[in-house]
Image (cartoon, rainbow, N blue to C red; front, side, top):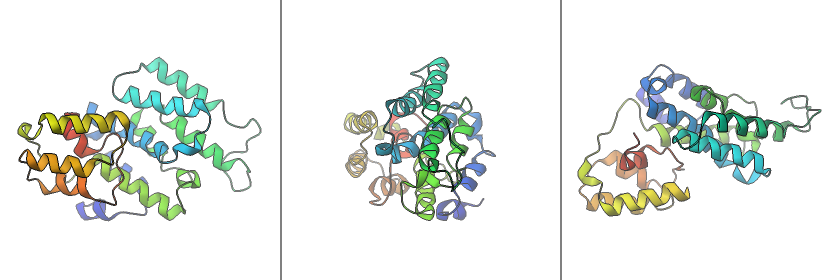
Length: 229
């Protein structure tokens, strides 16, 4: 995959995840964290449809595990609990299965708890019903996952440097609040605070101010501020 292809891809999120397998992402702690948070972010995109507390609980444990706040045992238990919500007579994910949509939801959630973070991320792109059909057409859902990958991994072909001087109290407070609440609507305000702190990096400021960008935990710009990269 080329630089341009990464930035313009809207059809094949699986190809983007596949590309990451050949980069240092899968070999670093921060990269593995981001892979798992991508899987969790996909589930956050369909959060209203995770009606069972076991489903939401599994995603929350996976998020905490990504940040080193949950154990492998907790992750395994949460995944097993989520898996029990699959319909007993399910035939899988085929079009003739009346439970295909909810089965896909469950499968996505269970995948967030996979022991291997790359598998957790790759699984998000592996179903015939992208995002379980809850985020528009398959084309729209795939485009949304591509955007989510860019939000979390930025442009792997062009790493962005971050100056410690930009990490002021105001900047840190804003980033921490958004991370804790998972409400990233304040990203444009973060951009203003960064600029006030002397940040003149277009990639960071433009990403924070992009009105069409969906942000989740793992967002590369917020991670730079929080020192999680």
